[in-house]
Image 1 (spheres, rainbow, N blue to C red):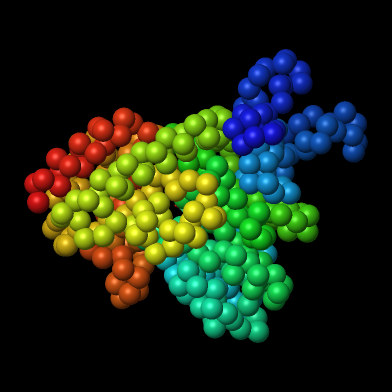
Image 2: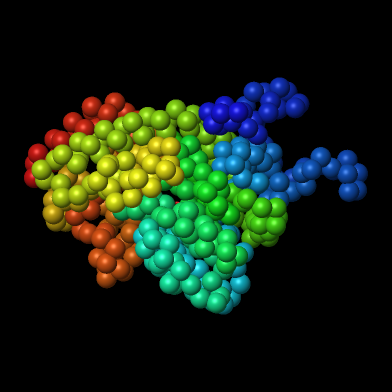
Length: 379
Ligand SMILES: *Cc1c(COP(=O)(O)O)cnc(C)c1O
């Protein structure tokens, strides 16, 4: 079955009682049992919900995983995954991740005895150098947020396998439409479903897709024990979103390439970060690992004032955090998504004050380019 077919049909069987073609929103907290110990597989709604289950089956199929479990947010998905570890364990992390991930690791989980080392994951040797006796997990975001660096997934997966550590990939930026990390040796894939999977900027959620039954069982246990579950309504919205994932991603990719090409030619722009551009340092790797480059682009203006001028003067592009929706969003990582990353760290990573990030939507691309062009002309 092809990806677009799976996106529409996997887990989305017609409702058994009515034949409803769309899985209903089962807005219930509990389920009547026929007699003591006899039920239809649903006991209590934190533990099981049919709307959530349909979404989980859908997402597991799209990533090619064993099982998926959905959560109240991307952060809840990441937090639950980290509970596979124990105090004293060490994790090697991509050095520029979503700011909230860095905050969770540094300001919450270190307090519970987990240790984190951040490295440039574009080279597997950096991961190898950071390895410790207690390293139990590698956590990659690829392409990274916001600089779009592409991790050496093949080298790092080999290392993780040889040393029996879990390889976790945050695949929020490309979605399974363009990249399926489990096929390259990752053991767990995470998404903020808030982004491309939902795709319409109208819900918050997260998912953990596991490749093996042991992790699947433990994540399922933690989903119920910790309880950071997604609601039936949000499950419905995300399942509605994934049905059009393939067509949306195709358009995000087409528009992303056109906007990146426009920005790369622009005299006021020092540098464009987009894995689809031939000058991107990991362009060839991106072509091997990904079947599309998506709609996330970062570009560098010379100063904060220049970035502010552009951000304040776009009309069609909306100034907002988040990404992956049908509408084009534009943001300023240094003061928005990455404000929780210390300045010294930001500077080292290249998240400069002039850096602007765009989540290219699926409007007519001529309109997106005209809007950016008009704002850039004011500089
Ligand atoms: C948004 C995002 C998250 C966090 O997800 P929420 O749904 O906002 O909790 C994690 N990783 C990446 C790459 C993100 O873009």
